[in-house]
Length: 419
Image 1: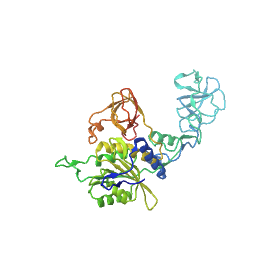
Image 2: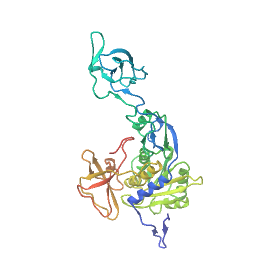
Image 3: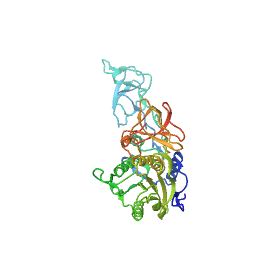
Image 4: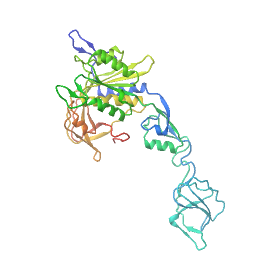
């Protein structure tokens, strides 16, 4: 896509901003087209990855009839003579005679020839030491294939790997999983006005995004090392070009903070031009966060890399992250496009004209309601720290109490699900 150009009067012109939903779709599509390669990893190393092939089971589940209770595997009518015992992990001999039984533990293999399993708490012993009782009508064992049949597809490619999936894979007899390589991300912080320690003073402000954005990226499945976070980068074009080029040498995704407009020290656009990048999205019709961007670069090795330009204002930067970077990462991982949950507005939320309004909200998950929060200026973080996500108010509309609206959730702790 074309880069911005300067008019004769020095005013920057370019294509109109993308609609917010269109921008998400573009980001997902380019990510999916550049989906990261698959690698086979031991089960213990797959948490947080994404399946690159369907999860199937190598055997029936269960693979053999297993007792669901402690008791007696019996043959024929009782009372029964005890001829043995079978524990979990053992292979019992068949029951070949009516009137016989073996003691059986929960999870143990039911012997061939058994006609029922009698619960131990519902059994008794006769005077001549036979087992007596009445088995329940329903079988007290799990039959082969009750959970799954050998070769059955249990979960599709694109499913995120979590502890439950890992446990299921182990039960299926899998020792490894074919998963997508996790994306490597870097962060470049732009702005000579930024401090990296201590309180704001003398016209300089504390950098809030350098410490925060890597944590967001990790929760979305990226690998970010401390060495991958660089800044503040000097506010010169050569410094920006050198920093972005160095980060792209190893990272699949380079996020930058600040410099997405066209001010006297905003060098991101000239940097992308110098590096031969193509814009996927260049500004989005959303408030806050309008001057976000996503660019695509193809290296000499043919490898596709991405630069996500996050605005310098903290809340706008997070909106850019969840609007563009999250769909991009879903595509790179081969996951489906994230589907937004809905909630009912508890209070009115104003519209923002012909732009989408992303309004910070706190969610009541019992009532499934969204409550707007305070301190939501583009440069503020207080409201963000107490919010669960953003209510999506469509262009040329406003949100009224009782309206059902999409909610763009913020990530919780690793492994937790927002809804």
